[in-house]
Image (cartoon, rainbow, N blue to C red):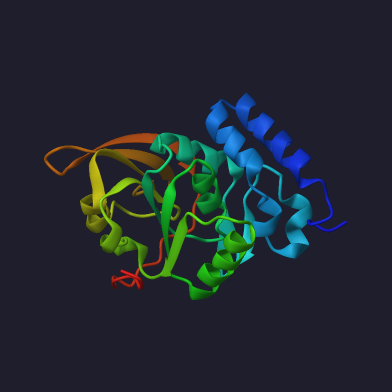
Length: 220
């Protein structure tokens, strides 16, 4: 049975129910339940699409574990109509979850193959409130700043200054940061009126390293 033939909605609801049991709020869990995750994974992994696990998607990248996607999404506290910058489109799954919450998503991906693939899947799935470009996520997407939220889906040694600049005052950035001992944690950063950020270390995670060429993204 292929990913298209299976009853994906039942599996997605079961995944969402499991996330609720793990402490994820109803609004984000319901968004997870509406996303056809099997479309965002390679066809040979479609049978595993609704497991709560990360899966390879090619180009040395992965689609993140649904719990981590849901957890990071909740930390943003995004509302309908708000603009979110996503650094690292990857498969497009996180993009779709944000779109299900009503966000206008601006997503930057440094690997052209991944961006093109995600664009096709998101379009086929009917997500019209997403905007994708190929470029260096470390410099964000300044042409659409300031953003109501920024989510980074690759590990960094610190917070790229350009992303802080593009975050609106009082709003949040959620980003995995690697410590000196190579351990990684999700950090929730809140921008202050003076332009600096206050950070809170949250969940231990494991993300692929962020790729950066320090160039301006296309589509600015």
